[in-house]
Amino acid sequence: MQYSEPLAFRLRPQALKDIYGQSHLVGPTGALTKSVEKKLPFSFILFGPPGTGKTTIALAYAKEMGMHYAMINAVTTDKKEMSENIADAKLYGHAILIVDEVHRLDKTKQDLLLPYVEDGTFFLIGATTANPYIALSRAIRSRARIFEIAPLSEDDVKEGLKKALADPKGYNGELKVEEEALSYIAHLSGGDLRFAYNFLEQAYISSNPGATVTLKNVEAIERVPNYGSDKDEEEHYDSVSALQKSIRGADVDAALYYLARLCVSGDLDSIKRRLLVTAYEDIGLSNPSAVMRTQMAIEAAEAVGFPEAIIPLGDAVVDLCLSPHSKAGCLSIQKAMAYCEKTPSRVRDYLRLTPVSLKDEDKYPYDRPDLWPKIAYLPEGMEEERFYIPNEKTLSKYEQQLNEQYKRLCSYKRRTDLRNLKKEK
Image (cartoon, rainbow, N blue to C red; front, side, top):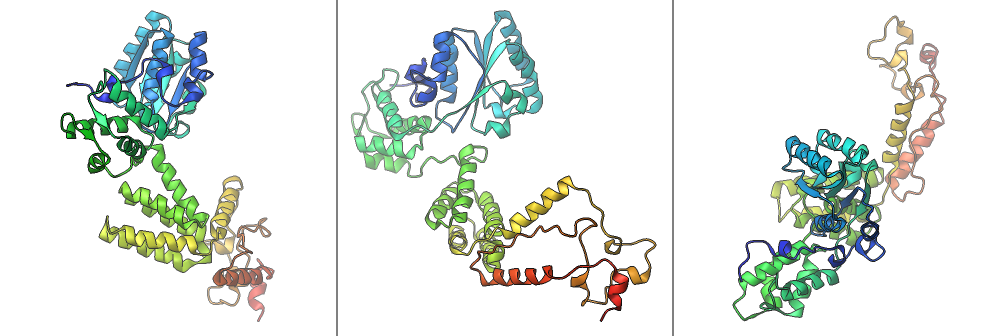
């Protein structure tokens, strides 16, 4: 049995009803099923992890609509190819243009499509692994519905594998695989049917004619789960986000799990950045020493690299999870930033680097540290503004001391009359 095309290509469904999962789109009452039944096409973007059927859904939809369609890949296409497809669509009156990896289109190419989507020259179907609310222009998003494609369940993947074993376009019953081995492949696939098909092809290549593929056989091929570790994939960002949220929620087991996922993918850069941000944002003033230890752990991880880097990184995650937490510093600077963005203000004359026409007695007293806490520093009209938000519920003794110091300093009536202030003892 010899094929030049990959198994996933040979078994690509030709109709929406044959697609695994995604019942919200291709089930009996799904949006795309109803669209096909009524012959009312519309533009849409399919967003989800690799191997979940985005391109397959797009092609099946176009074929069932019975309309002229063309498919391009945003990575390789250029303006010439796009213009040729637009010209073809005009000849047919209405057409469908499928753009794979649509998030790879730069803004100029996205803008090129807009007027033709707007006037109905063609209906746009985009497939993307990147969040369209970030990767696509607002103009494109406003002209297309956005559908999220979920990873397939293990049962769906297993069903796809069994079909591949029996289908004449697959192995036509010539390859035997133990149930345990199929379950293992489905589990490792992470909801990616293409990954599972590729795995099955490797099992076929590795097996002896007439032999049954066992769990031991497939374990020898691959033991690492299929995570979305590409930095352009949405699942990568989800793992990074989940790591910080787990630390914030003091769930040490969850935090270690998401750290491990990122370590498996070898993404040290994202781990370093996220741990450092988390340390300052969520631990911060409650435990400055833990923040410092995180920085040291990151430096150690950089020095040793993977696989040993997991040791200092694991220590840092446990330390941050179980430490007292405080967002006081983070929330305070965010409040100050929000104020600055909407309210213009002027630095007081005596605080300027080189004040002009200011008499000596009105200048900042560099030689009087006893007066420094009594001077007004905020611009005129902002004397009563407070940006620091104390964490009153903190269990950290250090932060409690900061809060007490803050209350003491707030009790001062800060002044701007430096000339008179200097005369006081």
